[in-house]
Length: 97
Length: 199
Image 1: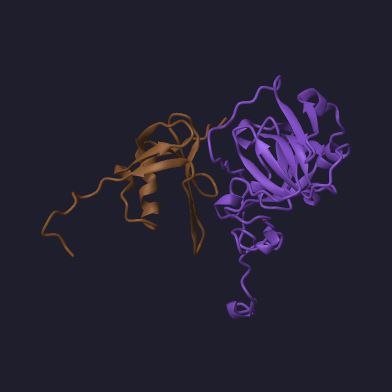
Image 2: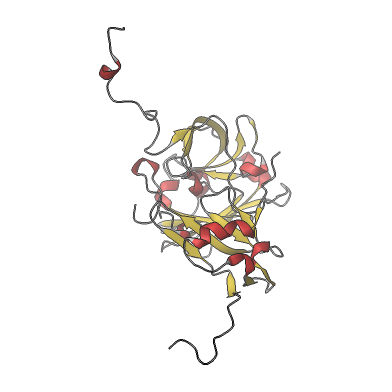
């Protein structure tokens, strides 16, 4: 019997880059269901499906769904409380106006 | 040189006539899943229809098997573009399961072990067009294909045929399910190629 397997969250980088410039592999996310905070790269991503489904590695709740139509994409992150994204140090004076 | 040159063979056939637009034929049975495969014991399995007035109709595995069984042979069409023709199933018609349910609802939300949901008009579950099936090709339905039991609604894209089905919630208002809230079409008629919202 075939057990459905999943990929790690690194595979979301390419598809998500179509929407955002954020590098998801270095982002942290909080699971809305269980509260676990961890690397988005650690999500369990089910890709043998009509879209990509990223699940919390702790409780398996859906944190991310990404559907790519031929000319549109849908991103549902209601299962992710927040994304914590590394940013460059805020520019101090003299910064750009 | 043959009598008929390649220029006189008419338009090339790009797909079988039995296939809806944009689909290709497959002989195997691809496994699609949006999550881990639930393992449901037959001892605890149940199917529940909840009407909009709060009443519930409930069947155990033994009670489901005691109902009149049908053996639909149908073509199935997945929104990921594969179609499989002449599949054989065994199960119970939704006409049978809905027969004693007193409802004025127009919509149903199928829900599954593992949390999956999908919405359908209640009329599409009637008229000999929908089943709860437990047997595929003469053998118990494997878990990866939705066993112990799944919906079979072959006139709509196969995401509407919920795997590991646990019940139906009958509703006066349409409530979109798992894929329908993520861009997929609310109805999903393969012959009208209703893949995404707005198709």
